[in-house]
Length: 128
Image 1 (tube, rainbow, N blue to C red):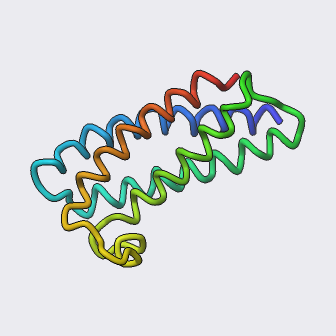
Image 2: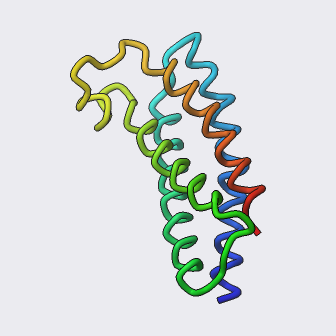
Image 3: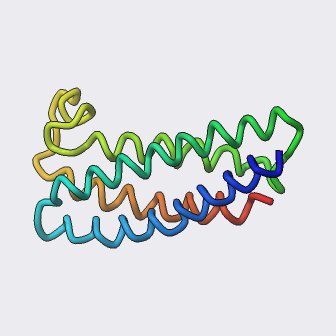
């Protein structure tokens, strides 16, 4: 079990570094379209967050609890939010599924990532 806790902590640190970096890069999307590489990294961060949530719930069911119960909610919201933001890439799964997709999804991605920075910080500070 200590290995699972360590993996959960390491994945959390990856997200703690990646999400603010992506948010800063995403702010450039307010000025010009974001490259496909940005969305690939965003989707990668989303999968790290999804793995982090799965691992967190495994630890929860094994009897380990976070310092604050909201930690679980922040993690779920972060994983879901990053997943949907990654799908907003022009031609992406979420962008295609919208009835009236935005012409400049970068604006929504930038704002969503700023919100995600708050979520990743809250998840970090409400964990163990």
